[in-house]
Length: 199
Image (cartoon, rainbow, N blue to C red; front, side, top):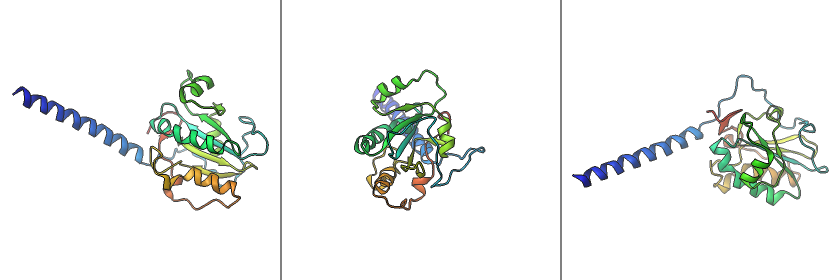
């Protein structure tokens, strides 16, 4: 009797854990709803970021829109750090923190996530670049024209190397090629809505 009860409790526990995991995966696999006040920004548009971030020289700029309260953003950090390490000599990288939590500072974000790039708190950059969810990548040419805005990868955990969209955009820009064709998984925002982590 006790053995049957213990097995039943274990099965119910595993079923609950599986259900929560499945629900979380399903929830973040849906596109982020486009806000009613959203203002689209076209590719090729000049993006003025001088008030928030000064590029070192005439280099392209990569902005990582990040919400520390968003699971998708947190899963994405290792991939972003890898891009910054690989391309940091040729591109200026920065993290744009999108949260209403006033307890976050540049130093707490840098220490907690092991970041070596500038950390910005200018949330107006999201509107300027046409971003309405996190995590999102924005790549600006050396002339500060919008070259890419979209997802890093089709996989929530950035494990699908065939769909490294942000890296493909970087490689294309550095090779002076026109923006490559990206599918809907690259350009449709997935993750957490701005300004908080609400879906």
